[in-house]
Image (cartoon, rainbow, N blue to C red):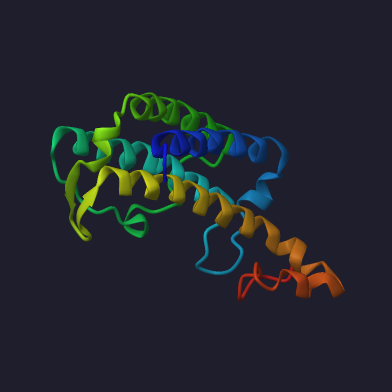
Length: 175
Protein backbone atom coordinates (compact mmCIF):
# COMPACT_ATOMS: atom_id res chain seq x y z
CA UNK A 1 0.00 0.00 0.00
CA UNK A 2 1.49 3.31 -1.06
CA UNK A 3 1.50 6.05 1.56
CA UNK A 4 0.95 3.52 4.37
CA UNK A 5 1.56 6.02 7.16
CA UNK A 6 -0.93 8.45 5.62
CA UNK A 7 -3.58 5.72 5.35
CA UNK A 8 -2.95 4.49 8.88
CA UNK A 9 -3.14 8.03 10.25
CA UNK A 10 -6.45 8.53 8.46
CA UNK A 11 -7.97 5.35 9.93
CA UNK A 12 -6.60 5.86 13.43
CA UNK A 13 -7.75 9.48 13.54
CA UNK A 14 -11.37 8.48 12.84
CA UNK A 15 -11.67 5.92 15.62
CA UNK A 16 -12.10 8.33 18.56
CA UNK A 17 -14.63 10.35 16.53
CA UNK A 18 -16.69 7.24 15.79
CA UNK A 19 -16.62 6.22 19.45
CA UNK A 20 -17.50 9.74 20.62
CA UNK A 21 -20.63 9.63 18.43
CA UNK A 22 -21.60 6.22 19.83
CA UNK A 23 -20.93 7.26 23.44
CA UNK A 24 -22.96 10.45 23.08
CA UNK A 25 -25.98 8.92 21.37
CA UNK A 26 -26.35 5.24 22.28
CA UNK A 27 -27.77 4.38 25.68
CA UNK A 28 -25.34 2.90 28.18
CA UNK A 29 -27.29 -0.32 28.66
CA UNK A 30 -27.04 -1.06 24.94
CA UNK A 31 -23.31 -0.26 24.90
CA UNK A 32 -22.77 -2.61 27.86
CA UNK A 33 -24.92 -5.43 26.43
CA UNK A 34 -22.91 -8.47 25.41
CA UNK A 35 -24.33 -9.96 22.20
CA UNK A 36 -24.01 -13.50 23.60
CA UNK A 37 -22.35 -15.19 26.57
CA UNK A 38 -18.59 -14.92 26.26
CA UNK A 39 -18.77 -12.19 23.60
CA UNK A 40 -17.55 -8.63 24.07
CA UNK A 41 -20.01 -5.78 24.38
CA UNK A 42 -19.37 -2.49 22.61
CA UNK A 43 -18.15 -1.12 25.95
CA UNK A 44 -15.70 -4.05 26.26
CA UNK A 45 -14.38 -3.23 22.78
CA UNK A 46 -13.90 0.40 23.75
CA UNK A 47 -12.09 -0.58 26.96
CA UNK A 48 -9.84 -2.87 24.91
CA UNK A 49 -9.02 -0.11 22.42
CA UNK A 50 -8.07 2.19 25.31
CA UNK A 51 -5.93 -0.54 26.89
CA UNK A 52 -4.07 -1.28 23.66
CA UNK A 53 -3.58 2.42 23.01
CA UNK A 54 -2.02 2.71 26.47
CA UNK A 55 -0.16 -0.60 26.76
CA UNK A 56 0.54 -2.02 23.31
CA UNK A 57 0.81 -0.02 20.11
CA UNK A 58 2.79 3.03 21.26
CA UNK A 59 5.17 0.76 23.17
CA UNK A 60 5.67 -1.39 20.09
CA UNK A 61 6.28 1.67 17.95
CA UNK A 62 8.96 2.81 20.40
CA UNK A 63 10.48 -0.69 20.41
CA UNK A 64 10.81 -0.65 16.62
CA UNK A 65 12.39 2.79 16.62
CA UNK A 66 14.80 1.84 19.43
CA UNK A 67 15.72 -1.53 17.89
CA UNK A 68 14.16 -3.62 20.67
CA UNK A 69 12.02 -6.74 20.58
CA UNK A 70 8.67 -6.86 22.36
CA UNK A 71 6.34 -9.24 24.16
CA UNK A 72 3.04 -10.56 22.89
CA UNK A 73 -0.18 -9.08 24.24
CA UNK A 74 -2.98 -11.34 25.43
CA UNK A 75 -6.25 -9.37 25.56
CA UNK A 76 -7.97 -12.17 27.44
CA UNK A 77 -5.33 -12.08 30.16
CA UNK A 78 -5.43 -8.28 30.23
CA UNK A 79 -9.20 -8.33 30.44
CA UNK A 80 -11.87 -6.08 28.98
CA UNK A 81 -14.02 -5.49 32.03
CA UNK A 82 -11.64 -3.33 34.02
CA UNK A 83 -11.77 0.40 33.63
CA UNK A 84 -14.46 3.02 33.84
CA UNK A 85 -18.07 2.22 33.02
CA UNK A 86 -18.65 5.70 31.62
CA UNK A 87 -18.27 5.54 27.83
CA UNK A 88 -17.60 9.29 27.64
CA UNK A 89 -14.71 8.94 30.09
CA UNK A 90 -13.27 6.07 28.05
CA UNK A 91 -13.59 8.04 24.82
CA UNK A 92 -11.82 11.01 26.40
CA UNK A 93 -8.96 8.70 27.44
CA UNK A 94 -8.82 7.19 23.94
CA UNK A 95 -8.71 10.68 22.41
CA UNK A 96 -5.88 11.75 24.71
CA UNK A 97 -3.82 8.62 24.10
CA UNK A 98 -4.52 8.55 20.38
CA UNK A 99 -3.46 12.17 19.89
CA UNK A 100 -0.06 11.23 21.29
CA UNK A 101 0.14 8.18 19.02
CA UNK A 102 -0.80 10.17 15.93
CA UNK A 103 1.97 12.66 16.67
CA UNK A 104 4.50 9.83 16.95
CA UNK A 105 3.27 8.19 13.75
CA UNK A 106 3.41 11.46 11.83
CA UNK A 107 7.17 11.63 12.51
CA UNK A 108 7.85 8.30 10.78
CA UNK A 109 9.98 8.29 7.65
CA UNK A 110 9.50 5.82 4.75
CA UNK A 111 12.69 4.00 5.74
CA UNK A 112 11.29 3.30 9.20
CA UNK A 113 8.68 0.93 7.78
CA UNK A 114 11.25 -1.78 7.10
CA UNK A 115 12.61 -1.77 10.66
CA UNK A 116 12.28 -5.18 12.24
CA UNK A 117 11.74 -6.50 15.73
CA UNK A 118 11.00 -9.89 17.18
CA UNK A 119 7.46 -10.45 18.44
CA UNK A 120 7.43 -13.07 21.18
CA UNK A 121 4.84 -15.24 19.36
CA UNK A 122 5.07 -14.22 15.71
CA UNK A 123 8.83 -13.94 15.28
CA UNK A 124 10.36 -11.25 13.07
CA UNK A 125 7.94 -8.49 12.07
CA UNK A 126 8.34 -5.12 10.40
CA UNK A 127 7.08 -1.78 11.52
CA UNK A 128 5.06 -1.57 8.28
CA UNK A 129 3.30 -4.84 9.16
CA UNK A 130 2.57 -3.56 12.65
CA UNK A 131 1.05 -0.38 11.22
CA UNK A 132 -1.25 -2.48 9.03
CA UNK A 133 -2.21 -4.48 12.12
CA UNK A 134 -2.84 -1.32 14.19
CA UNK A 135 -5.28 0.13 11.66
CA UNK A 136 -6.94 -3.25 11.09
CA UNK A 137 -7.23 -3.76 14.86
CA UNK A 138 -9.01 -0.42 15.29
CA UNK A 139 -11.45 -1.19 12.51
CA UNK A 140 -12.01 -4.79 13.65
CA UNK A 141 -12.96 -3.86 17.19
CA UNK A 142 -15.15 -0.97 16.06
CA UNK A 143 -16.99 -3.34 13.70
CA UNK A 144 -17.17 -5.90 16.53
CA UNK A 145 -18.76 -3.25 18.77
CA UNK A 146 -21.25 -2.26 16.09
CA UNK A 147 -22.07 -5.93 15.58
CA UNK A 148 -22.80 -6.23 19.31
CA UNK A 149 -25.06 -3.18 19.10
CA UNK A 150 -26.93 -4.72 16.15
CA UNK A 151 -28.07 -7.87 17.95
CA UNK A 152 -31.28 -6.64 19.64
CA UNK A 153 -32.28 -4.90 16.42
CA UNK A 154 -31.65 -8.05 14.39
CA UNK A 155 -33.66 -10.11 16.87
CA UNK A 156 -36.59 -7.71 16.59
CA UNK A 157 -36.58 -7.31 12.83
CA UNK A 158 -39.16 -10.04 12.16
CA UNK A 159 -39.25 -11.12 8.52
CA UNK A 160 -36.16 -8.99 7.72
CA UNK A 161 -34.03 -11.01 10.14
CA UNK A 162 -32.71 -13.21 7.33
CA UNK A 163 -31.06 -10.18 5.76
CA UNK A 164 -28.77 -10.01 8.78
CA UNK A 165 -27.57 -13.61 8.71
CA UNK A 166 -23.95 -12.58 8.16
CA UNK A 167 -24.06 -10.29 11.21
CA UNK A 168 -26.11 -12.26 13.71
CA UNK A 169 -24.12 -13.61 16.64
CA UNK A 170 -24.87 -17.26 17.35
CA UNK A 171 -26.44 -17.60 20.77
CA UNK A 172 -27.46 -13.94 20.88
CA UNK A 173 -30.26 -13.09 23.26
CA UNK A 174 -33.64 -12.46 21.67
CA UNK A 175 -34.09 -8.99 23.13
